[in-house]
Length: 235
Length: 235
Image 1 (cartoon, rainbow over the protein chains, first blue to last red):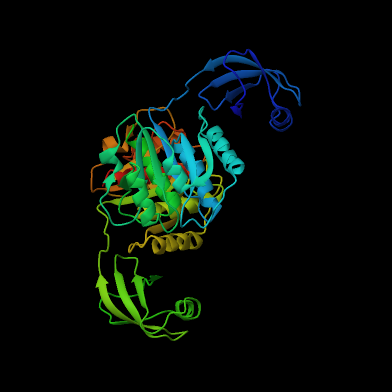
Image 2 (tube, each protein chain N blue to C red):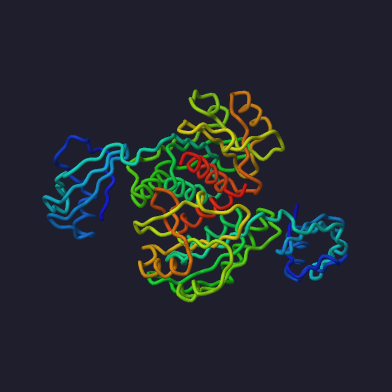
């Protein structure tokens, strides 16, 4: 089944024109013909079953046969804020895997010990898009541009707020602390961890310190572990 | 702290000679000197605290100061059998991540729909080794050379046996079915899944069909999800 990501489609349409790029891909590369069935996802929960009405290589016309809204809507909201890794591949695979397993929002935070101070959101967002297509998710996780840790923890966020750090301290596990079907924000530090000052600042801003188990995990593995736990605890 | 993987060390020694390669690395690259403290792991649960006695660039002598056996011994045994992915990077990161999170044995299986029929075990084993060093694990997961699925499911294995597949069928979750502190073997299929015949054969050999949740996961993500779940359920 061919799947296209069409963020600009609206639930009430009976026809949809694929972009020139998607049209070319559909007709020239995938060799779809009139009558071929395709699926569209809008990234906002809408999943559309459609078929090709005009196999135009630049302006393919689709006839929409059915629409499902809130397709596989999640029962909780997971937001992970992570310091981009020095090696960008690692954050890229985290985004791919988190999208497959289930995540709603990702924020990139620049911390005191971050070696990498920037990250190209467009490129990273493309990875999320191909992951939702691959795993047929109708919701496109939101990716926020990098902001400083200090700025980030000042922003108003509702739901439960957690910080995962490695400093010896009193910590709880997500299993002990998350409320089912809730909204969660989890902070994941850089290689070399958050600084003690950052941890204090987070605790003072109402974040709860959590442990992700006994293993010493890389930044991206810790983030994926948190993602896995939050989803698993909401099964 | 500098860490070396020294599989040939034995718990009763008071001295240890680093290999020529490790000696060169320790002295020429890391610039360690007499008295510098290092940690050794033997891959069988032994963790050694040592210091440099003779900083010889080809034959560094270490003095062993303390030995811990069964270092962070796991309370369960997890064996995952997975079909190598077409793109080897994906199996490589699975090995790295599973080692960080916790795994004891990995078998590579060639299934009916496997596009990749081989995998270089030496290279993959090196990835496991660097992951145990990075996450300070004293046990080195065992990696078995590729065998055919048919041959593999004939081998005698004690503990609970599971197969994760995508065919609509009666399935349980690991949460419902694993016995804590047990031995588990979990089969993960290739891109394109196990064939119905393979699933039947596994069920007839005493494997239980499991689901890893509602998301459609790539081979390596499914394997990591299984690894997460088995470890999480043994916390």
